Length: 513
Ligand code: ADP
Image 1 (cartoon, rainbow, N blue to C red):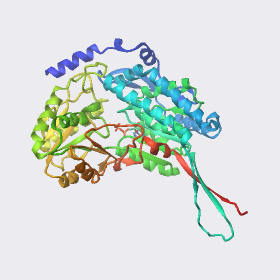
Image 2: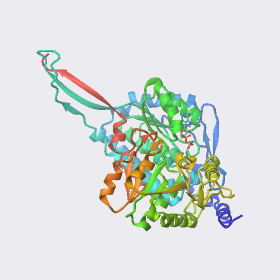
Image 3: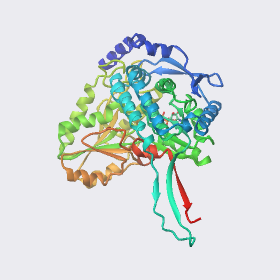
Image 4: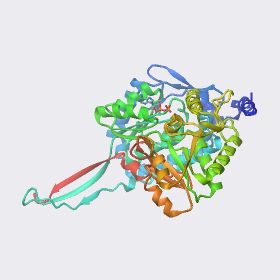
């Protein structure tokens, strides 16, 4: 057993549930149910599933396993709330007030939510508190500002199809209806927020299906929604498996829009299922985002930036900087620096505030990541840091840095969704734009440089929904996020997220009649 494995094993043994807050201990102590019509109910089948702590593989909670029957009930509740309830009659300013009240409650319980997220997902409790929960509050507040600003337009008509008549044209925005949201496990509370906050701001109602690996903070969010005073049926949660509960929601004829975050493979299934009743669709899918260090970059800054671009959240980030391209003259220095930082990272449970890299979310995810790592090694790539899973009780993989890679390798082409980066040198902007774009994905990219003209020249060539300059993984409620190519359809956050939950209705009035 190597030293890192020993340390992680010791930390995991110490990571017993005595660190858990009273509120979280109570929450975990009872089987968690589905939220339908503001009532907590068991799954119709009576089934439950286990939720595990990724740092120890222990079962920490039992959660109702909803399926198609429960999705039917939740969609019916959401439909009733949308068609005829206090929610549908609520003034925009009152909707705003409710959304702000929810943000206040999340802020009140921020420490507990962060701890629960760290326990459920394996991420660092510090990151959970200062990224996941903090950003979730910011998004709820940003979206709370929208209900009173969803304006229509007057349209200057000049058509003359019917002589002698005169028309006035208006367009107004109306909520789409029932929104089904299916989310991944990497940022559970935050993704629930990205989906639910714009939908509720637009006046829609929601049925949320959290990821089966990480349902806990979404269920706590459900408690806060009820406490905030949202009318019944406005926000419903059905926990369960993807192929049953998720598939039923995606295909449901009573759902008007489906919004999904997850793998491109499942995204394709969602799009097909949505075609049945032509639901509106937003899908935020995979990525293989390039981090590009130009020849004039500040090298130390680029080393730190490239390291955190990939290892933040154990690399389980759809926009992680998983391909690193470095100007040839800095390649050796940058690679030495990134490898050194990777080797120095303290691996341990998320609840240990000194951990810098936590476990992956599940044993399945660790196997998936290790399959890629082993393929890379077999294909002839060189691991200058990491390359192994730890034989600790949790699902740990060492932060891994590959050089000597070529574009045909699976580790370069496919999304690994783990702490693994592949690196190559390049010679000029044209060349790096070509390799950066040589991917089925187009979610994000970062450019590290001090030369503003190169920023514009390169950014305009990159096929990516977000291009960061001298930063990576920076998200803001006002900044739309989503992908080109197979990284998805539509955008999360910002005005675009709210408008994606609205229909546009044209009103044409004959004023000569
Ligand atoms: P990962 O492979 O990383 O777990 P997925 O894309 O499989 O990511 O999962 C993201 C979300 O999609 C989860 O909530 C999961 O339950 C759900 N899901 C998985 N399969 C399906 C499916 N066939 N239909 C609808 N949702 C699904």
